[in-house]
Length: 388
Image (cartoon, rainbow, N blue to C red):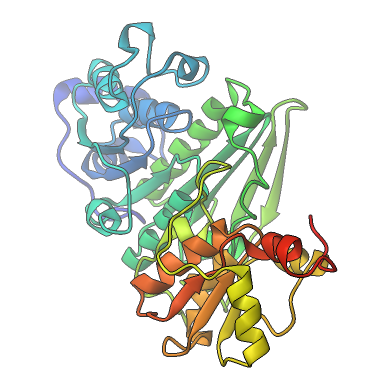
């Protein structure tokens, strides 16, 4: 239904009256309004971005709105998630938002998807929609939504918020760059705080969510100029907009000339999503640092895979390691031999445990985690190795 396809279903008399201000716009008119009525838009997340986007899309007459969310309304949400209210505290956000949209426009069909979007279900959920609005707040889901949209040929209306700053763009690999072209790898774990840690100005998601709704409407109408190839940056504190030109990366692993991502991967591993500080992932067959020293002293043939960031290797490293940062393991797995014994290390053993789990799920049998990481090696084996 995007890119100016033929008109959708006829409008009722009540709908003609409701959308009268659209009908007077030459760029929309009754034909464009019929396109909106026939369109199917999926919003991933019923939070700060999803709420304003859903409200304006419903008001505009988008015929079918899919909403993906599995959270409940909390009091801290109400500062910015304007579709929810005090009366809906504790209720699923899907129920709260669905009731609000039904009151706003009963002509819109709201399709709830009460699931966490994963690599197992993302393609099935997204496949039935024309446009996807990314209202997520975490990197694994952003990359998941991007890759699924690229594989299905769907436009992805992107938004992001933190503190006083927001971003918006349209990633459509059929005509321009995708999210990975601009952000090929996520930041190191913990490098970017979330909204709970850094805060967010309550009105900011309203601005960015409204921009996302605008772009979705324009995509359905086949507008000649959208945010494809452009990234809008908004600073609410200084009330300034800036714009960056984005270009398609020919080496992009998902939409480039020689794509290596042909199916959805494990995005928790790709983004280095870690357990809470102080917890440990249990991996059967851990290698201790004393085991590692013995293996090296004997001259055993094995790969020592270091999944830390390159900057960390400059602080402390061991000789003869293969460095593939955790975020890149799913993309560069072809550089490793699944038949060769492999020991995976990081700083403390937490990131390497994630890598081991992913590698075992993808055909690596003789792969082991270095318990305690290079920090334990410095403490127990070689005090000349710097600690950080």
